[in-house]
Length: 468
Image (cartoon, rainbow, N blue to C red; front, side, top):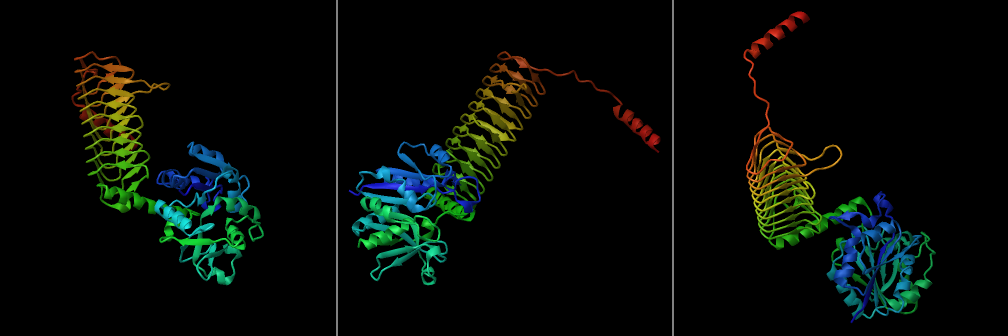
């Protein structure tokens, strides 16, 4: 069995990102860039040990990746890739297998590619192997120098390459397999006599060749898979590649996506079969959507659990909520955090719900605000109804029983309870509890003033004469 320890290099700031945030923490489909490499090690390669070398914003990285299977080492001064791996050596003491060195800013590499790379490394009986790619423009990358038989002879960094070497288009991806015993000895021999004054991990190739040890280079089929993220443009390219991969995965699993070019999904989103997503939908975070749902255009859903047969109409925004089966939401609805909508309920256009439970079969079809409320089953919330949940100092709860009819333009001043099977007349301001089965109504007696329009006309004529 080939035992693997993974060392992931994630200490750099990433100055070309022009950001205050460490490069490996920049999000791709809702997850930090570093997640993709860490996930490969933990869950696909299943390394014996996963070591992450951190430096810039180390505390934030360690906090974000709080997995007991990960061990962190610090590279306080960034003196090159060789120096970074050197920091991990104490954690390799006694290990006699293969060390897989990965880069935290190379998120697109596939598990199958790494498995093939490791297997080929073992079969070739190499001491060191590097994953390479042939690119159209190799500027900025280390060049691969092969011998007559194709074995790896040297890796020359861009700034140290001769004019002839600069023409080579096979480049170093930064991904290595190295036998642990050689790695621990060889790192002690590399120096920093180069243009950048850094300890290059690539210099291990020359150390191995001086000892007449075999080094190999394995070319990846798709160069995009091993692209490094150095700029915001690279980040956008990687995001698009992973987005299309996610969309393809869902469509093959039975999800209808009307326009893959304009559908935006985080890596962690789950969607059931026979659900349809219309253009310009955005689904983020830990969102889970059931089967046979319809999500119409321009809707944004974050960290929300959605049951089966749900319709989310266009331009709706839903955050940290739970929606049960056969519910209809929207259009232009807003569900804020801690909202729960029970089976067959309806939340209509321009309705906002916040930290509330809407009971089975209840409906608020038009222009309402329901905040900090418990709404029972089969309740009708009339247009223009609001719960007045904030008194300027604290939030208070409104409780509405089952089968309550709330008329239009009602104000429920919390804290207040409305009993089951009661009704509230349109335009009522409810300031005290309503008993079960009662009708609550509070209106000023209507008064009609006859001849009002004539009085107003005379008033306006007098004003015009004064101004004239």
